[in-house]
Image 1 (cartoon, protein in one colour):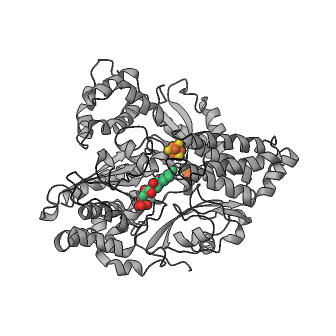
Image 2 (image 1 turned 45 degrees about the vertical axis):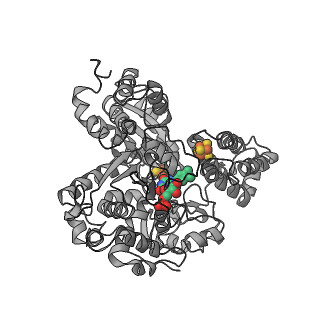
Image 3 (image 1 turned 90 degrees about the vertical axis):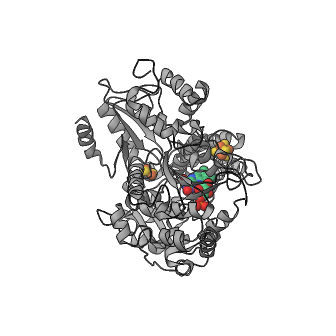
Length: 164
Length: 427
Ligand SMILES: Cc1cc2nc3c(=O)[nH]c(=O)nc-3n(C[C@H](O)[C@H](O)[C@H](O)COP(=O)(O)O)c2cc1C
Ligand code: SF4
Ligand code: FES
């Protein structure tokens, strides 16, 4: 359990999760929205949470695991506090995404798709498929913030601002 | 047809307050809903939408009114609306514009659709990478509740309806309508064999209407102004307003609203032309799945029929502009990396074929391919093109179309990679 107290959902999220479940005629439909919240809160999905969530939604841990591994936004390894998706698809690719990726990797000291976070736990990075921000190519999505029209010169500043 | 601007789908977008309910109401927002609930029967809404011939803006161009008419009559099950806001076709960002700037237009469209099809519940499936659009919609949903446009007994009538945002979590195939339904139900985004079509058996095994964001956002106009006003816009093939997403090597990328049937060449000029004064190499007109068009093929009207006659698709109307420095082999490698990554793996021709094609093109790009590889690449794609029922969904076709068309139209570039043993564009 992300909270470590063996209860699912954790107290602070119970009301919210019950509210999500209430939107659907079948409990399992709440699975992906709840996993998204867990990923956001704890930067990863733990085995304990998958088991707890399976029981909470009357499904099996195997089903939950199958879903967690299918979608790219879930991670079983702990991501950084800020997770960066850098678009590498067509419109971004032809406007310099590759160069940006090496810059981000170098400055953050962490590789895309390694599943690792930077030493201080602040950052992790993955390339992603088209983020639907192509008019601002090249672009990234960090947490819930879209940043577009990125030039190599902006990379330092973006990282500094995220560090806060 | 030349460019005729319309101000319907993204009306008021330039204002800071465009997303608020106050702004929407000041622009006659929710008048269509009021008219529908107080003066029209559900079947009259379906008839008006059918008369307007709104062709599905998700890419396939199927008429919304006809789809709504497929709902089985007299079934004792709930009916659902599932709005497709997955928008993950590379090069596409129009639905995001609607959701971020004009969320109430979409909500009103959803409410009208629910009333028409006898549904009390609608889900808007928004991809996980659109947190801004999700927040904008949730805020709009709260506002609509406060003003009595959503919830129990809407505007004092017997119609009750809830619309929820349902988040995706990163998977292109969830944009395919049955993959989306699997995802809403809490599963992997696996597309399902059709029939049964969603209208007969969809979400939670109940009749379900699936429509794209832009499709539904046209409904308030059709009901408020009438089908004839809608038919007066666009072309006979594709009536109404249309959003065009322009990106790539272009001076002014962005989301533009014109009558459907806008001329592609004029649209490019409207966007300032190819960037940096360079020459045009080609345009991918309808998202990454579309067949590429060469510079002498872009004098074409952007509606479903004309684009098909031009040998491509209108698709999601995501135009990617390519300048003369673009390496087409590299571009195809990039596109095939996308499709191979996004294949859900259920059908062997799609799973194996996209991976195989990616390998061949990667080899050619690296200068390690042979002339036979070029033919092989085309053949592999031809083989996984799903026509003839080899695959469950159309993702395989979506991967085959760029592959075949890039090879056919830019064969010399592929051959040059083989001859030189390297990429000719990269010195
Ligand atoms: C691989 C694939 C991806 C798709 N992605 C989307 C999408 O992101 N958004 C969308 O509206 N339709 C998408 N579609 C089309 C849907 O299956 C469906 O036709 C559409 O949502 C129906 O709505 P409409 O009739 O209003 O266009 C996709 C289809 C395929 C085969
Ligand atoms: S065609 Fe491809 S994406 Fe579609 S169901 Fe088959 S394997 Fe999955
Ligand atoms: S291609 Fe990068 S956001 Fe669409």
